[in-house]
Image 1 (cartoon, rainbow over the protein chains, first blue to last red):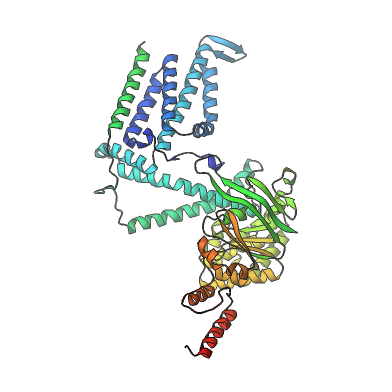
Image 2 (image 1 turned 45 degrees about the vertical axis):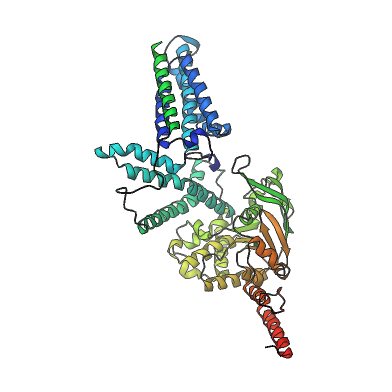
Length: 265
Length: 291
């Protein structure tokens, strides 16, 4: 169960996408998301689908990583599809009592379903091809201009780095404590909802306790290494745009322009 | 009656690029009443192995039998909880699993999960605390989080002992204890063993192994590389050093002496035997008048 969590998972590789600057990738994903929701006819959606598949292939990441990501939110996707199908007013295709499926509903459902699947897949390419460190570096640099209006760019990035860094640690620790308590006869799998919630206590108490202790130790270790916030901090690996970033950028602009055109047609 | 592993394989993250073979074709028979030592460096598969002994991990291939019953087979499902409790597993740094408000409640967690009566639970808590020389009267109402590191460790181990397991498996139980606490704990473990409990201990300390284990297995790369009585294992220091493991400190002394040209045996590790060997060699030299 815990192995299915893929948030922030990075898969080392040497593909074109792995080598792109994180800033390019972040902006590209934003443009992609906007394009995905601008497109409103089947030709456009088909084009996006082909495009996304191409990106997936370029990333050279095994397909099952995407399936796993989709599996995690399959319930949300199904709920959206069903709601769209039944709730959209229009020309009815099928009626039963108060339930009715409309032509517009089916269309909406197909659109939303495809959009969600593509959205999850492409955003997971971002984390799968970018190390958490360079990802937060990218976010920090992109947020820098907003510092003037009070956005704490460095602090946000640092918080993200730490959070991402500790996800695997916490998962590992949860697993360890779970096993230790199972060895003492704790049962996490059977019983009704209340019993199961109660069974979580032996897991959560040590987990929180250790997390708080670790946060304390981390703060101390950072201070011991003279951490004092983002002012005047330099980087070992400064971000640098390369020609491939220009190629990727041009590609994204073409996609956005194409998406607008499908609306006009 | 015994714990048995038959051709056990275990693979982490099967099919992903991070796939790793943690166990490869492990065959192991642990007899009742035995004191078995498991050594190997970090990542050699020790911890993975012991988690198979009570069914926390399921082998990718092969069988694990507890007293002759395969714990992972479907027919054993109803029995699984009971089987698992026959094997008490103490993880590394077990104090991290403490969670109850009082020491008494925490130690009683296991027995209570076994469905025992409250009076029986109390009796077991008292018994387990006595075994580890924890004072029931003064500690029972204290929060386990207020105790010292060594005492926390003892409370956590008492929590496993209170379930009266037939086999006790410990993963580096003395890591992080001060020398005195370490000595004390190992003596208590020895007492438990003399009372008839089967003990399986993972440790990095070859000195502890030399002193307490009746039989040892040496793991490397998910396989059992050496198996035998401590003196058999330590008579092959080259092999141990090649795997990246140490030998007991007195054996190391003998090896050093040999390197400097003294003709000593290097398969000893008990203080008395080592002393006699060194004395013998010195006397021989004296006899020839070289010294």
